[in-house]
Image 1: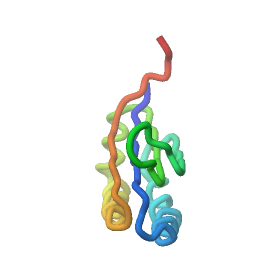
Image 2 (image 1 turned 30 degrees about the vertical axis):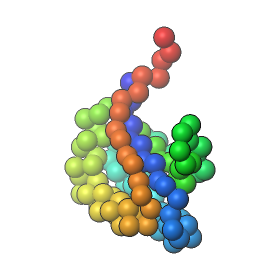
Image 3 (image 1 turned 90 degrees about the horizontal axis):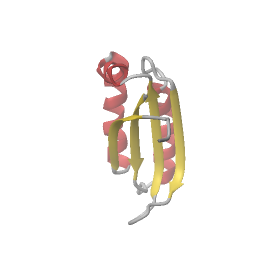
Length: 104
């Protein structure tokens, strides 16, 4: 089982400004999160209902305790502060969950 953080960003008013900030500021901050195992970014995610998402980010840790500790760390607080800046550029929905990678 793994712990995951998922962020779904709506289309920003200024996509160039959002992309630049996300690429140059937010990703480097997030990559410093302790215990981060995997970071995936997807674009143009189609919604089953409603509007598509502009960007989807999925971050992965080994356990939920590690995920929570990462966001409680100084690096996590810095990443969260920057996420508030991103929220000014594009609305975001986020969640944490555990994933069981086995079928059945």
